[in-house]
Length: 317
Image (cartoon, rainbow, N blue to C red; front, side, top):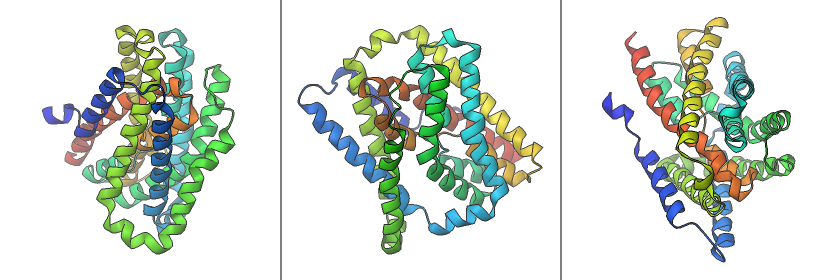
């Protein structure tokens, strides 16, 4: 139990990346070079997302429509409304950019590996979890920017969200190319899952470094103090608690089986850092992206810790 409370290795790498970006941010002539490297990494990331998602998984999800629709509605409907409601109830609690980060977090798709692993540990419907992860991330390429734009415009939050169609195209293109390439490279992708997973993490670290570098140069740590961090952590804890309780209650209200409720619990409450960090790099100005992605990074660690405890408890009952 004590080990579950500690950050995993990747979270420690993220913290180290933020430290490096704070001490050695990218400046001057190196900025366009590193930005180009980040864009190449993002393109590769979504290409490999498309490459490793089996066509059968997408079509199978359409046949298991009741559970999958519940996951999509909760991920892209209930969670964004929850974030928006919290911002209306306590607007002065966080700066505008952090509320925009909360909106961004709430509009993201579910995780892949973490949600599936948690569902498996809790003895849920693992096959449905795989399908839910695939459909959620596929839908998120289009729905996340659209939902975020609606929330930001309604709340009056900042953010350069005017080019949603172009951004969605940039993300969809490599994914579509990956799906096409799967016709020839499916076996290769299955054999190199570990390598592709490492690419995911490397891309996240690169995008976080670039985002935080620009934010630090713009005076991030002068704008964000200990009090704001403490308040942000309180909002994240509240958001995660309601997300888990709400997804479980929705599964019960729909009369889903216990295994399907477990799938909805983790697929609904989880949010993907692997998708969110690169997408923030594309959606927001460089100086703003570092602050925007901060709520997601906190949520990521908390969802891993809480999910391990919940999954073990459900498995025992």
